[in-house]
Length: 229
Image (cartoon, rainbow, N blue to C red):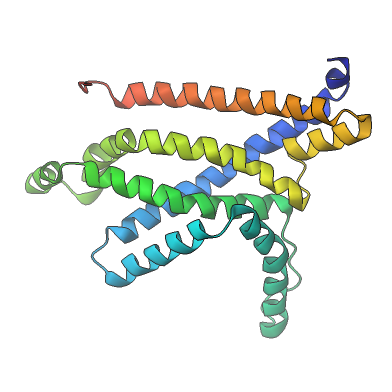
């Protein structure tokens, strides 16, 4: 414990970076998930086909491979295009941007199916009733679709978030100083790698536990007035 206390600032900085990365990638994932769900439920065949290609490709590539492809290959591709077109100069993709963007796009594919299933679970008659009452689309979304979509999506959303939070550990391979990277560095410096990996284990467990409590509270809020079996 004395050794962990000595490196506490390094561990806390890594934990803070992990939380920031997870939240940034979550925002991206939710945006891609909502757009993907809209496309899959769209009347446009092109939109449905593009959404299907997106979810199939992203879910079929290992997360680590995709992160390394974006970080190393993405930067080379962008700079090559800039030199070819002359539209921009040298662009350097940071570890944070590459990690958050890639993880967000990856989990956007999973959120697509989560949101699509939640929207499809809403009784069609309720939406038709809103239309017959003259409610505009935005009002229907706010008062009919959104509250029920959140309730139906929360179990899958919670599971995806917990997996996404742990997936942030992969960015340590591209040099981002997250919790795993800092714990590994401290472990190598002190010769107590197991001790610091155990500390990272406990911190991840605390983060996932707090997340689970928060989503349970959110579930109770959106389930008010709903009779459970």
